[in-house]
Length: 205
Ligand code: HEC
Ligand code: HEC
Image 1: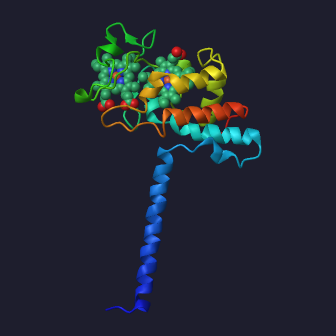
Image 2: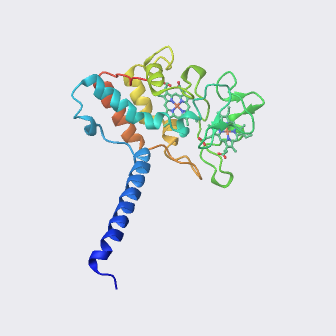
Image 3: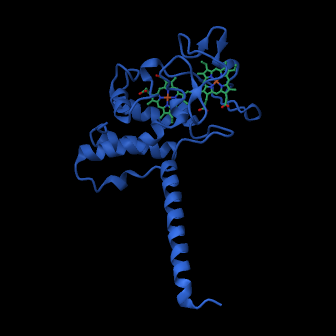
């Protein structure tokens, strides 16, 4: 048997390993969860606090479940790495696809689990001016606030859209094999509300 003293280095190594694993798990959790607005209360400066709140909500905005429908080009994106949609479909004039290949041909009113096809009654692409693909959070922030590029919405209407729109809500119930957006729709909307209340400041870059 090993004496207690001789066990110490092994114990220390085991504890170090456990600590490293725990940090990894926390980091992974961190990307999957949203902190509550209270977490940012310690930031005294309202603009800095507001920007921090937007950055937290940005975990959602930059998630593939949102970005895949807010692409820079004319084709939707798919999967966790945002590759171009297969088959090759285009947004068309109204975002619901070209006349010969409408989104609803394949995307039904709800997720179709056997075929792994996502679905929603209004499944279509966000217009080009609402593209988030390839943009920094600062650029997305400026764009979301700009009525010329956000569908003529006030900040309150942006909050309402994120809080209640069911197409946005799909991102948290995306169906088979897809990672849901971080946190919950409620948590995301509470962060956006706090961001607006503190002045709707944008992060630096
Ligand atoms: C010919 C059938 C077909 C048509 C038409 C079609 N899609 Fe799809 N789409 C699919 C299938 C199948 C998937 C699931 C692929 C996967 O995730 O592996 C999919 C996935 C997607 C995704 C990925 C969702 C995610 O985050 O994982 C988006 C976004 C999307 N489609 C948008 C559209 C839009 C917008 C249109 C119309 C302009 C459209 N699709 C037209 C078949 C189609
Ligand atoms: C199936 C496609 C689809 C998905 C998924 C999707 N959106 Fe959108 N989004 C749209 C469309 C279409 C519009 C334009 C609707 C309008 O203006 O009425 C839009 C507009 C918006 C707007 C208002 C305009 C702007 O860009 O400022 C916000 C905010 C928004 N989406 C947030 C989100 C968030 C957050 C997610 C993910 C949690 C998401 N969307 C996922 C299709 C989608």
